[in-house]
Image (cartoon, rainbow, N blue to C red; front, side, top):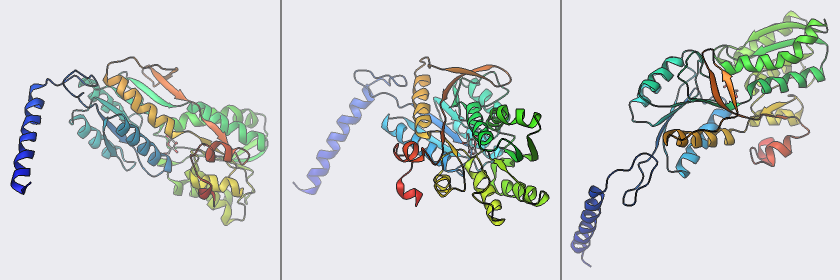
Length: 347
Ligand code: BGC
């Protein structure tokens, strides 16, 4: 066939296709009709950061599942900055999204975003972190975060039931940080009250920044002649920094310390013996659940929940997944066998 003929033939095919497409009525979101493809569900995703490895995994999983399920996912990442997140979410709300998945940098400040979405009839999933102070939130999808803290508190008090403790908590703007600490203190507080544990430092790590944790631990070590017996670190990022401070004093591996997130670097430290434990929250499950729930909300279906969490205004219907404790004893089974990390990550 000559080139011009091929071109003419292609043009004809294109015209027919366009003609048919023009005839069909668009189907409502998520529904298929006999002669029209389903209108793609559009979901907006706003994440607070990519600093911790886990948030990178959350994003990747949601992108993967969205692609598999034929969902359009528009992703915005704020650099741990609420103003940036507000601007990004406001932009998402103008892009015709059917559902918003929002992991807030600042729990309370995100309330206005929920109210705005609600006015436009866009349901909001509070992802991993709870959005507080609004009665318009549709659903909270996370792990049982009090349980996360309980696992940390139980572990550390079983290891060290008396002595000098450094107690760190996460960013005060993150509701999770409160829940983690509340859970951990269920185990630590009774031992403080019994005069067994002495708290030599108790501080929140602003913005979850590891550098801030480093300073807290350095200051506590130097003010107490290096006499530290245990450290409650709220996540792996802050634990890594605390271990750096311990290492500078030749104490890495000698002071039991908690963590959370099952980051690769933390898994390595656990195998090496400088970090005592971490909490595994399977972001693959959380990410997949977020997309599934978004589809249900877009289709106006009822979402099955397994709990309620008070956000200061309402008991928010919640889907809470189970966190798992990881120590040297079960790390390979829980993290490597499940494919979350590889043997090579531990090298
Ligand atoms: C998350 C943790 C994370 C921390 C810092 C918390 O809200 O639940 O997994 O380590 O934020 O990003």
